[in-house]
Image (cartoon, rainbow, N blue to C red):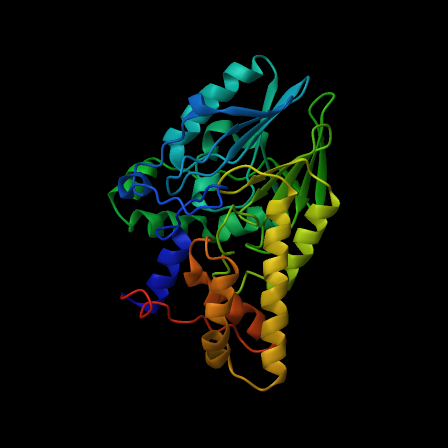
Length: 332
């Protein structure tokens, strides 16, 4: 397996166990992790008077999906992967919405968050400018890439069509659903086009993959900015959310955000300290990886720790990002 493809496999989610909020490590059945990524609207839970979430059931490629209600309109946050999931989601949302208008937005362009969106129609799709550009630039390649992973991915992406937004904004957008104001805000860090979604009434925050429940942040390429990620965590905390819906994993509160911020600040500080002492990237990775694992022994996917170190090393040394080769560590 080539280094390039291996990195993309990591990024694509094949090594992406979705984690619960328990303090104990819960190991899902292997068949669950590789099950078809079909969303289950019948499992939706009400997390506030105006917000429903179709939860991540610990299956790869299924995110937490949100439905936010207002008097005149409904906003859907993330789609699931592929048109089949999009149709399941639309049928569920139509039952909630009735005659109200339906909007759709995605926290970022990755397949399980956006590639079921075509069912909503261009006029109803909202994205920030950077996300729209990133989808246009990378979307077709991601379809081909994910289809190459295997039967499950090919099945999920049958008939997939990328859809460009009819509503594009920069920086932030205030959406009035009718007696319910929702803020969409650009927060690039994990990807160029990340956004968060915040309900002013109930203070529910959808973070996308900027916050996951109990596993290490994913910094797969040069579009990820570690220091910006910390800034975004601070912005989220300042919003004082009561409910935090992570991209994947159990729903929680602002302690999920604080945990990610605290961890990233530690990585940032420790890498900078060793850069100042003259250590090179490979040495820093060898020095710090086990330490960071021990900080969160119940977080999944520690294979991403070297990526985080490489990201901050590139920033502090003003050098091109050199992604570590993790294939040897995983026996590939």
